[in-house]
Amino acid sequence: MSDIEGRLDTIYQTTDTMLRAGRFEDVDAMLRAVDPTALPIIEALSYLTITSLARDKLLARADLYTRTRKHFARVDPARVDDLLRGLE
Image (tube, rainbow, N blue to C red; front, side):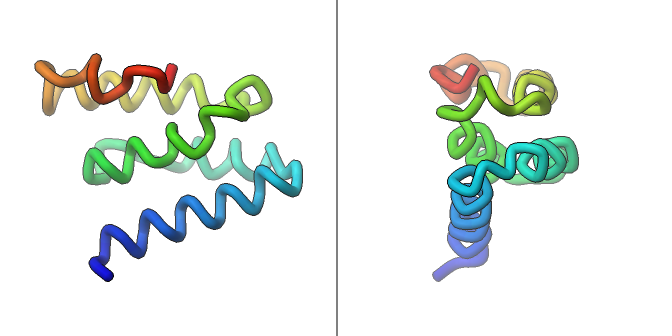
């Protein structure tokens, strides 16, 4: 397993565990700490993907989406809409 695969597995498992336990404040804290400018695109997208179904319960998710969108617009402007489609 590659480093990125391991990190993605950790993100998904940890976040899923917290969401299933109703620990939305903990997930919000994690989302606030995410710096999309310091992550590979796939890793930044993973936080938005795993939290998409709980978006209405996560106060910090909209801000992470905005920060991620701004970063993607700088690094990959041609693909920003495709990368974030459905993750609003």
